[in-house]
Image (cartoon, rainbow, N blue to C red; front, top):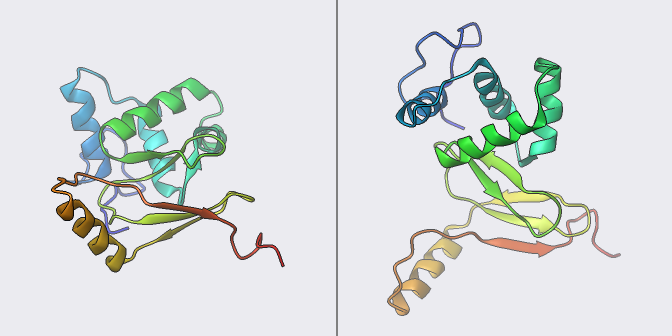
Length: 160
């Protein structure tokens, strides 16, 4: 991911880099009269160090290692805020709990989802994107966004 992040030695009270995830969150909270708390700062940092698609429970377990007193509700509510301000995107793949992935400065991508083990593979394909735009144009439809998910069995779960 080609985003700029706060230096690991910086404190949450230091000025974040312009255009950074921390600045986006601080601005979002400020515009709504909410405070940037140490817990929100830590949750953002742990989320940004997490790759792939994480559940709220998985992020909570990681947060307990950083802040043993943190509550699940705090992690869940902060994830909701991260989605609202564009730093995270909630994904529901039809089985199990919602998952969250980084959304800030990420290129659009699609997903292959294994219905047996839950493995999620991200992929990009310009031809698919072109066809989707052509279909929308053919139907005089203004395409705003889309999610393309393919469900099946991964190489490890495929029947022999």
